[in-house]
Amino acid sequence: MADKVNLLDFDVDGLIDWLAARGEKPFRAKQVVRWIHRFGVSDFDQMTDVAKKLRATLAEEAVVSCPQPIRDAESSDGTRKWLIDVGNGNAVESVFIPESNRGTLCISSQAGCALDCSFCSTGKQGFNRNLSAGEIIGQLWLANRLLGATADGERVISNVVMMGMGEPLANLDNVVTALKLMLDDHAYGLSRRRVTVSTSGIVPAMDRLREACPVALAVSLHAPNDKLRDELVPINQKYPLKELLAACNRYLTAAPRDFVTFEYVMLDGINDADSHARELISIAREVPCKYNLIPFNPFPNSPYRRTPAERIRRFAGILQDAGLVATTRKTRGDDVDAACGQLAGQVLDKTRRTQTIQPASTLRS
Ligand code: SAH
Ligand code: SF4
Image (cartoon, rainbow, N blue to C red; front, side, top):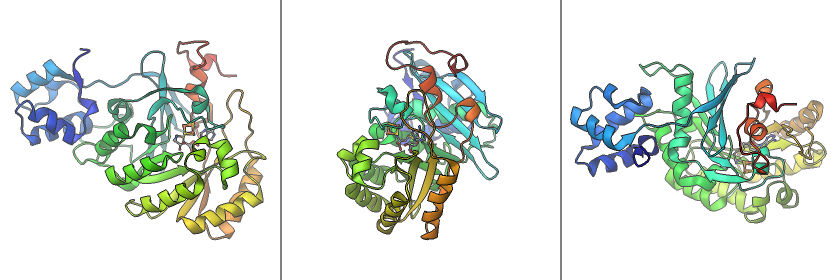
C-alpha cells in the first residue's frame, strides 16, 4: 500500500496524465474524479461505469486515502469541528460553519506554520510540514461524507475558506491542486467567488496564485503600518505594506471579486486605537477592500487580550463612517474551541514536551 499512489493527490489534469501513461483516454479521468469527489466513492469496485480492466489497474496501483478524524465535536451553534490525524503525532483542523444562506468549510494547509505571527496559536506551535494535495482536498472530501452529502450530489458545503492551520501560500503547489478540484465541475464545482485563500502576505506567491488559480483573496493585515506589522506579522519585514498593497492590486486584476478582504485581529491596547482605524482608512484608498475585524481568540500563554466588544464596535464605526465595509467576525463554536487555530493548539504540544495526541477535553482549562 505504501507505494500505491493516492488519487486524492491528483486534480483532473494530473489524473489525465497518470491514466494516459497507462493507455487510458482523458474521459476516464473525468469519470474517476466524479466517482471520487462528487459521489464520495473510494472503492474502485463501485465505479460501475469504469471499465473492469481499468478498475483492476486502479486497485493494483492506487488508493483513495483520506486522513482520518480523531475528534469530532459539534458546538451548540451547529459549528462542527474535526481534528484530523496527519501522522507522527500531528493533527490539523477543519471547521464547518453552517449559516442560513451558506455552509462554509474552513480547512488547513500545513501542520503548524513557520511564519510565527505573535498572536497566533498555530504559529507558536512551529512548523511541522506541508500537507499534501490529498490531505488538503481530503478535508473537503471527508467533511462531505461526515455531513451526509447524498449520492446525487446534494451538498451542504457551498464555500471553502483556507483559514485553518498553516499559510496556504507557503504550500502553493499542493494548495493549487486542491483549489482546482474545488472548482472543477467534475469534482466539487464551487464558484471561484466562494473559495477564499487567506494569506499573511507572501508577495511572490500572491502573484503565482493569481496566475495559477485566482480565487477570492483574504489578507491578514492586522496592523496599519510597518512598525506594528513587523512585530505582529513578521513576514512584513520581508514584504512590507507598500509591496503587499501593490500585490493586492495586481491580484485584483484577475480575481473573481473586486475587493480584497483584510482580516484584522483585535488586540486590546495594541492595534485597536482610533488612530489605527484612521490609518486603515488611508489603506482603503489604495486598495479596494473590506475589513473583517476578528476578536482575538486567546490561547494559553498568549501575551494578548481581546479588545472589548464596545471598543470593537467603535473601531468598526470609524471605518463605516468613512464609507468602508467593516464586519466583525462572530466568535462561533467557542464551546468546541472552533475559533481559528485553537483546538490543535490545545491538543498538540510542538514544544515536544509531549508527542502524543490527547483528547482536547482533558486539556481544556
Ligand atoms: N496563514 C493564513 C491563514 C490561516 S489563519 C493567514 O495568516 O492569513 C486565519 C486567520 O486567523 C488569519 O487572519 C489569522 O491571522 C487569524 N488568527 C490567527 N490567530 C488568531 C487568534 N488567536 N485570534 C484571532 N484570529 C487569529
Ligand atoms: Fe501562520 Fe497565519 Fe498563524 Fe501567521 S496567522 S502564524 S501566517 S497560520
